[in-house]
Length: 296
Image (cartoon, rainbow, N blue to C red; front, side):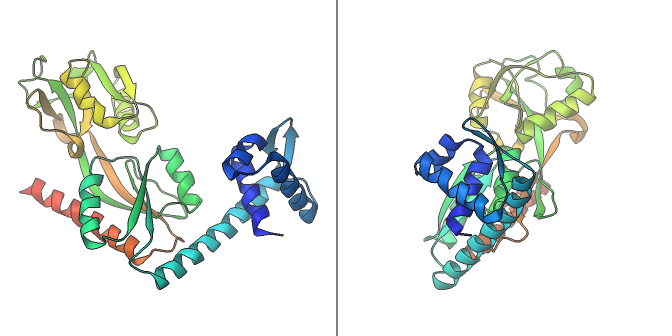
């Protein structure tokens, strides 16, 4: 059994389509199919049910997938550990976020301490983040909501109040706080379902007897303030993501019943490099500073 066979198998298992898998691997379909066929011959069983060019993992393939992912995961960790030992001040930090509002401040502080470490950041949904964690493709995730699992370490770093942003001319603009039930007839702008803050807000409002009515649903949380300013709708915006704009008033929710937890997350078995450990310290210190400012 060859390492190349395992890599090709994982690509096909994840995409379940020969053409797309070949494209992602930059190989021909013929080469990919022959490699998978040799793997199946080595194992003595078929790993997929074939439906045209579409493939579906069968019972054998599903079992083998877990072992193959684990094997490649461990090899990748060994590669990273050797790289860290040989060049501890170089390398790339792989990060994933569901909430990006605090990231510029955190990365700026990290760059001051580790100027030669590169970083690569992906904005993901919670489901995508879980998949990347299990595949060992990210060092750390900054997520709201938190993610829990047998192989996942989850550290809550901040309790973030969610505010209601309204334009200055809005009927509530002179208020400093509002109850959620007062917003049942309002029109909202927000992110799509699948993002932590949206799902949290919707679930709490549903428990109170109403579903927020959205006139805009997008992928860019930073755009919401501009839409509120343009009086398209009002928005739920975490305190860490608010912009100080004269044209927008931010209202607290009564009784602080609407808050989100921000968590730092990593795979329990992933090798933590010196740079990654330093990143974790920067994240924790940043949110401790914010918490102290709120108390003061």
